[in-house]
Structure formats: C-alpha cells, structure tokens
Image 1 (tube, rainbow, N blue to C red):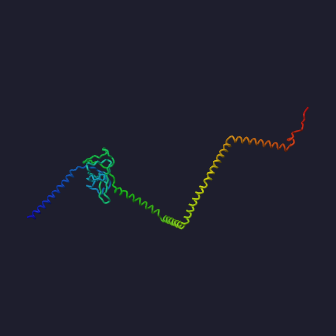
Image 2 (cartoon, one colour):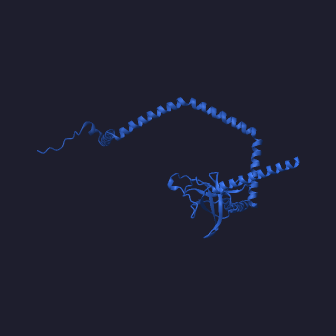
Image 3 (cartoon, rainbow, N blue to C red):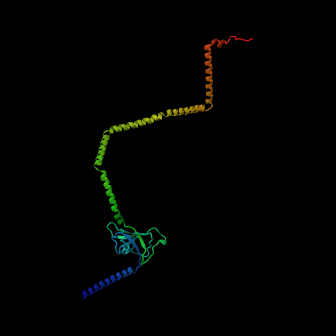
Length: 291
C-alpha cells in the first residue's frame, strides 16, 4: 500500500512540473507575441546566402531584431527584399546602411545596420508596423565585394605573370646570369685585394690630414694675397679714374706739345745740315738797297 502511495506522489509531482513548464512556455510565448515591433525593408543585390526568416538583425553590433521575410524584388529578379523586424525603441536615421555580415569565417550570417552620423529628428525613419515599410539603404557584404574583386585580382595576377615570363626569356636569363657572374668576379677581386684597398684608404686618410694641415699653414699666405689683391684693385680704380677723368685730356695735350717740339727739332736739324753757318752766325750777306 505504501508503495502505491509513493508512485502516486511521484506521478503527481511530475504532472505538476509538466504543467508548470507548459504554463511558463505559454507565458513566454504570450509575452513575445504581445511585444510590438516596427518594420523596415532593405534590398540586397545578388546572393543572400545564409539569410533566412528569423536571422538576427544587429544595430552597430547589438542584437535588435530578426529578419521577418525575404522575397524577390518585383522589378529586378537579381535583387532580394528583406523585411526587418526590430525593436520599437530603436531610432534609425536615413543615412543608415544595411549589409550582410558573418560571424567569422565559419559562423552564421546576420544583417548588420550601421547607424550613420545624422542626429537630428528630421533624419529619423518613421516607426511603422504596416505597409509601406521605410527603406534602409544597403551595400554589398564584405564577402560579396571580395567575390566580385577576386576575378579582377586574378586577371591582374595573370597579366603580371605573363609579363614576368616574357621578361625572363632565355636571352634575359642569360644576361642576368652574366651579370651575376660578373658581380661574383668583382666581389672576389675586392676580397683578394682587400689589403691593398685598406692601404689605399689609409693613404687617402693621411693625405686628407696633410692637406688640412697645409691649408692651415697657407692661411697667412692667403691673407697676404687677399691684401695684395685689395691694393691692386685700388690701383686699378685710381688708374681708371685717371683714364676716364681730366688726366686723359692733359696727357693728350702733352703728346701734342711733344709732337710740335719733335717737329721743330727736326726742322732745325735739317737747316743745320744745309747751312750751318747761317743758322749759327746769321745771314751776313747784304742785299741790294735801291737808291
């Protein structure tokens, strides 16, 4: 009898626990369904692999809602319209951007909304739970951009590879081999004559040191030469003043007087040669005096 009573007590306890669990689930479901949401739409171009109904929506990294529906754009079969169900207390501005993000390389996808920079009330998107829903701008996901860019990168890499192959033809490879061989020869020569090179460098250092000493010793000579040059410059200035001033006129007059003197002396010499007596004693012949 006691065993039956224990079984009844355990069964009653299990039934009570199951009933409490059902009530809790119904209460949570009621709370969830009684909560109000606002809706937005965004259009993604291309594949939306990883998205589905119930996919998480995040705003600046914080979970704020779910994807309520996915459908093709009526005027563009290549685009997908996603209806987003988010919290009503969330303020989204008209410069917000929606994109498809991924939780790591192997994680699931979600919709990420970048909140933008506008803060004024005029830029806020309206809160509504009925059509038409406000539209949020979208941009391709990082993976989509990468998938679009990879073919271009591959084409460029192929072009570079073709150019490298063209550059490294047989003739150019031989030329490069000759250059490397010559460099090896030069390096070996320098290594073999390292002692001579060190000696030359030491001699150059000594010659530079001696030149510095000689330059220091010649400094007084340079000073004297500088003074001499200054004196010559003054002499040249004085000579220029004589040539360009009154001195040139006086010199011209002196030369003219000298020329006249030379002419007179020449005339006197000629007369002495012809009639020295008359020049010295005068003309003593008496001329005819008419009566």
